[in-house]
Length: 123
Image 1 (spheres, one colour):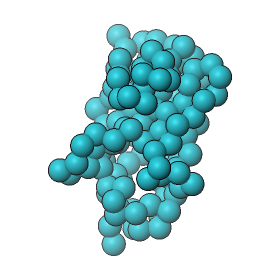
Image 2 (cartoon, one colour; image 1 turned 90 degrees about the vertical axis):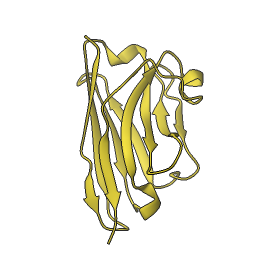
Image 3 (cartoon, one colour; image 1 turned 180 degrees about the vertical axis):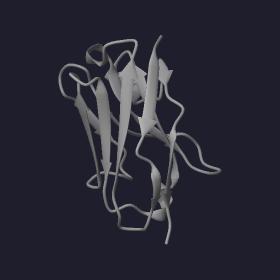
């Protein structure tokens, strides 16, 4: 059974940092593009970042470039999102999602996704 489980969300003050983790089970992460999208209150879904399975291609939304870093550990079947310099507008539920290809992922075409983890940035 394919499963993605996110963790690491929470409440943080503006300027703070969080590290999200997504553990995959039921399939090998090696062969999938995987990344994070978010949905804030009253907002549309936004692709935040993804990393390809093979050639190391990485995508970041303009809104997070220079602040967020995605990485993957295929041996642990886990992907991470290091979020620094957090802003109130980063408040959202963050979901981990896979796609058959990098080009499909950036169009927000997902094969599987998790239940999400809440990130709240507030003073």
